[in-house]
Length: 176
Image (cartoon, rainbow, N blue to C red; front, side, top):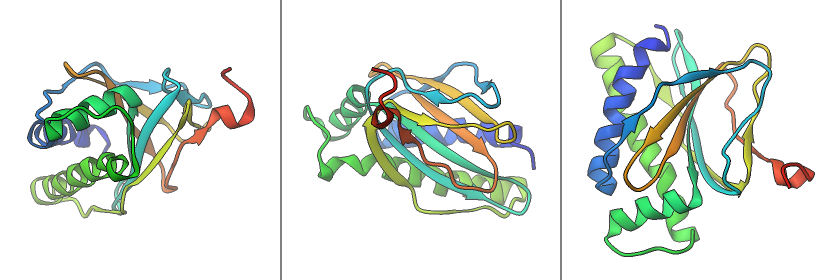
């Protein structure tokens, strides 16, 4: 199975999950392949990122939701019908929950409808300033810009057998 076969069910699943969980309507811009060997980072300084790996004998990749903090808070506020002004330990794992629901539905779709044999690990959430994903010459990153009335975020698909998590570029004095 090729990654291209994953995109249509992924988009449908993401639309369904965010509509039902957060009352948010998503649309997708043209995805693009990050140039090999180049880092990818959100432009905002404070970010909420959740990642998990979807794997099968045919295809393995990390999927990441990358939210600027203000967009994440708008999604959470929409979900609960009250305003949230800061990311607290009580709400930060909602990003992982949204990804976990997406993975469960996507896995069912890929396995049942496309004959895949996918499993996934448990999503992990990371917060930080200017979180960066590194891509080497072998590991491609597919960047999917996601739009909503509440704000925009990105979904990343990082091909390869190794699970990928971002690192905080501000720790190294870059991006200041």
